[in-house]
Image (cartoon, rainbow, N blue to C red):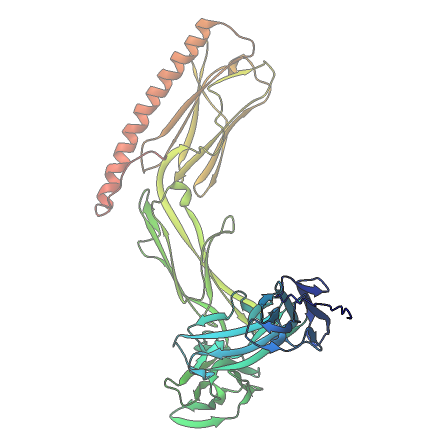
Length: 533
């Protein structure tokens, strides 16, 4: 009886417990249209697993190999390899595919989608951009950057006529760049870019040229008319038409008298409010002084206000300047006027002088002027001119030396100036040789002695006065240099005081008589007596 042997095959079925990727990478980044290396998926299963690749969007690729050639941006995303049989199911780790592509403009839009818009109505431009890596985007008006952030990039505006133009959205990343331009048109009535002149001065036989730059959209209709003595004449013009900015010009050579008058520009474009402007063309002429006066009189009291008036003719309209004639100091300037005032709120002695009104304009490119002068007299009593340093009251002079005492006086009208001298030892009065220099309101009185002797030592007193107010009196004690004799000094002072008092009383008495007589003659004039300050 024979014996037989057999094999028992035991097959253990199981599902996948690991999904292996080769290459073992989980992230890939490639430029668009590039090839991604094949990625193979394997799994240990019994029976063999079915291997498929699944994209996060749900797309299924029924093969164990993920093969992406000439990769497009829509293939970017996350993929998983799925291994499954009747006994189990398992997915691989995520594999991320990134596709880089250059910056792109997806759209440049405006609210309402119409790029022809009315003026003053708020609107918004928007630009949507795309690209990987994330691009930088900017929005330009012509060449001027307006906005550079956000996606979409938005730019709001309340449009004006000069917002018409090209709006460009530009985007750029490391892969590439792109831009898109749309032209915006803002509907607007005609209006000048700058304020227009009303008057234009032109010389005979010269050239008249008027250029007007203005804004308008849509394109304008332009006309020029010459009006004189009730008749209208069409004037030929040269026009340069742009998109929204335009220029209209008239040009006339050898201007003659019949061509002076009114030139009227009219511009229309169908939008409400036409542009209409009149230019009055006048012959040039240099300035002339029509009137120059001091409204409250040429002679005034101190502390009184003084109001000057000057009227000047001429075209172009002149500039009027006020100038102090003695120093050529410009006191005031009014530009482009026919009349000007200059005011001194509170006059003093030093305001006495000549004042010049000067009118200036430009004729044929050159400055032309005319002027006239008027004198102002400010009544003031005699007083020291404080602009100069005063002489010392005590003056020491060596015997045989020189003595010089100079006193600066202000007064109007011209004062009477006298000097006296009382000897320091004998008390005797002497006549003093002195010189006076008179100049309108500024006066100088000088005592000059050469080779001083003992008879020249004493008290010198100056007295200056006119009919306006109290006199100016001052004494100077002249003594030998090096003298320390106190009693002599006291004698000098007492003599000076006595002389001063005596002459003061004498002069005041005389002035009182003069003033009383003057007041009778000028009873209607009130004058305030005061010291200069």
